[in-house]
Length: 102
Image (cartoon, rainbow, N blue to C red; front, side):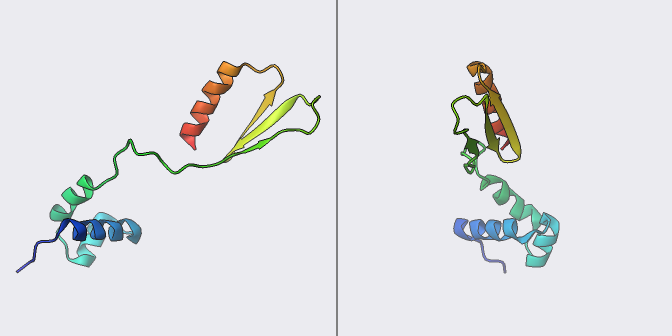
């Protein structure tokens, strides 16, 4: 007779599944757990989409000379060259998009 699992046990199984690298069908088969009983817990314990994601840092390069004509801003694999006289509103819009992508 199968013993009912506690919420903590289901959460532990979900962590184990997430780190296994296996697809749901293969993992459930390996653990001898019914996919139809596991899936509702998997779905209900997922982190809400509104939780903040891991923060990633970029680098800013500011030239030593005050006469330089640009600043390079590197975020992940994206590099922005910001020239003197840039439009601040446009930069804010671009940075907003870049941060969503990273």
